Image (cartoon, rainbow, N blue to C red; front, side):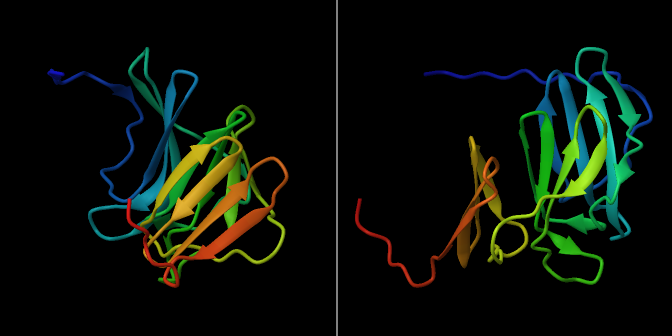
Length: 165
């Protein structure tokens, strides 16, 4: 298979987000949403922006509710019209184990309660959605959160040895 890619600069208007790193980005219904990260001065962010992919226009989203604290290295996914944020390093340099959800219609933040205590991977970890399971994995721990029944499964992967393939 031969793949070739062509990149081109595109003019994008609107209220653009500041330059940042270690933020999250998700795509939903023709829009890309970004949350948080840290700027070039190392300041932690907790703002939300939306890029209309058809119109090529950025908008800073004014949200309601209790939004997540400023953070970087977190993970995000979209499920049933909601953006879920989990983990990351917060302003006090601690890993956050809370899950927050942003309704992408009402732009209302809320905490997403999960049964039992969450054992989370370290900050800057990988994640994948296999609906309704959100799988989060890092160097020491892995867990799965069922986004429908709010139950979680944790696994200490340091105790497991990989099996030959």
